[in-house]
Length: 210
Image (cartoon, rainbow, N blue to C red; front, side):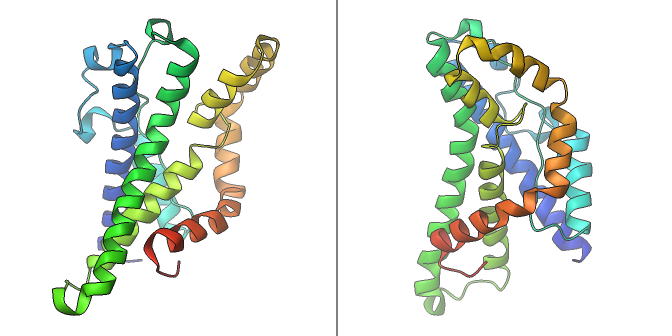
């Protein structure tokens, strides 16, 4: 993969994780918590959200190693669950908002691809159009799928925790101590198992082969 393509991949990933994090903040604000707004994080300015390891280093390593699954993250948007008007469903909504935002972006650009495929001969689209829009769909689907994994601090763990009985909290807290190691191991050794799901959803939304 040449340098220009790497830049495209990482730039799209960065903006996608920013959308993901900002969605968490707006969902928290909807339920009454303005922590993210007071922290200046309800903005699409990527400089406010970048995490060097998750937003730059890890994606670069995955792209250069030809990983089938491009992943990354930004600094988590802060929120205080004690401020939520409904703690259980507020927490679930805040956790799910980022996933839903990424899936919405994927569906939107998947629809654009399908629509333009039917009219491409009359639209005379630029050569790189499908390359860029396909990357947008793939990256946002990957983020949505990846964040459903129940490994802290991913959103899937917060959603799962909201449904577990209080008796399981001690186990979860012990589990969280090793979460970063578990997450890195998962990314480098097991994330490829998510590729069939990604391939199916990409083809379903766009009509293109993965």
